[in-house]
Image (cartoon, rainbow, N blue to C red):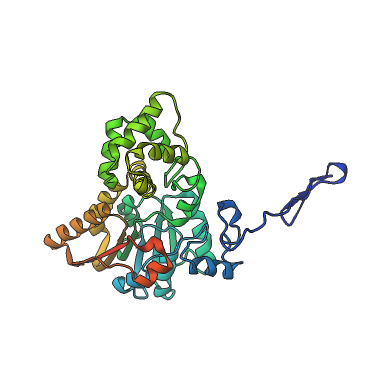
Length: 361
């Protein structure tokens, strides 16, 4: 007899029956292992669990808590009937808030390069009632906004959130975090380009030092690069997040014992950031986006950009001031807008966020 599928469990007839397997028990209010957090990954079914996790200052597995939503809406001043662009769709929280402001009139375009998350987010937004009549989702890098505008026309408001989404960071299979073991990947689009492990095999020690200094101001860049490349030269593999974290730990034996744990934590965060920026060409993509941005805006259009480290913020600030001096932007933010203390308490990942805005002449 053919196999049957009952409630997701394969059952075979007769002696060859498949043994019933219980679902993994949910271990407490916030399990450690990603695969055990099945309640957190289903917010529509376990709202109480989600709220408990968030109230503890954590982000539920598979979710992303959108940052500075109210501040962004205040800057963009969205009106029904306008056409907008979310250049970085992610989990879709910002997109959803902007769509609500349109009140069913106008249209939103949303871009993302991640083939895994873009499908999930599109379905999530469709389930909230945002179908193709008001929302068009495009799988493309936000450096290609000119190509999108060539089809869609110009925009009345644009948002770019330059941060990596929590669901990418938390999933060990994506390799974004030094805190959990997984492949050393770090690509936003895992279907294209070199992984971080491949990148390390294809650059020189000097290039790695420069990458860490330029992308994340790593103070122990030489020590870390020397340890990593000594391992590679003697045939050791650095293929996983744990492999790289251990190399960093070994490199930082030069730090006094009392300070070492914190130093390793900070260096791991900086080195992973430097590699992620390099693997995804994030500065080059941002250069291209900022250069093309004025050309896709209608007169009076508003732009909001969220940045998460000083290198990004410097580029945005410089571009906005340059185009204001040229008369292309009528107004730009003189100072950055930061998230409130209450938001940072509820969502610690918001702490490094900076918001800048500009208005097209």
